Image 1 (spheres, rainbow, N blue to C red):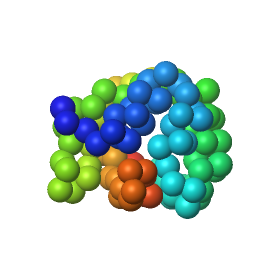
Image 2 (cartoon, one colour; image 1 turned 90 degrees about the vertical axis):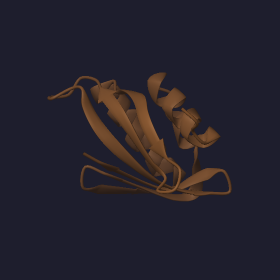
Image 3 (tube, one colour; image 1 turned 45 degrees about the horizontal axis):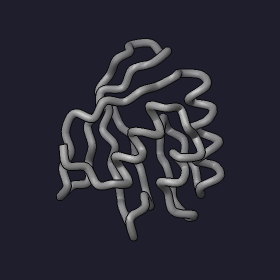
Image 4 (cartoon, rainbow, N blue to C red; image 1 turned 135 degrees about the horizontal axis):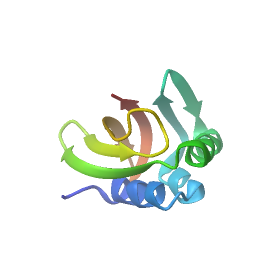
Length: 105
C-alpha cells in the first residue's frame, strides 16, 4: 500500500506504542478528534495517545488508503470491547505533517 511517509510513520509509532514518535507526525497546531473529544497541539496529542496506549494497547493494520480523500481505513485491535474493529482516519496533511486527524467508526 502506498501511504504518505507521515501516515506510515504514524502507523509504525502506534504499533510500537511510541507516543513521542506518534506526536512528531503532527504539526505544532494540529488537531485530533476522537471519541467525541478534541485534542489541540502536539503536547495534548502526545498525552492523549500515551493514555490510550496504556489503557488500550492499540495496534493498527492499514487496509486501504484513498489519496484523493486522505482517508485511511485500518483494522484496530487492542484491549477494548469489540476488538478488532475497522476505523477510518480522516487526515489533513500540510508540509509533510498531519494538521488534522478525525477518527471515525
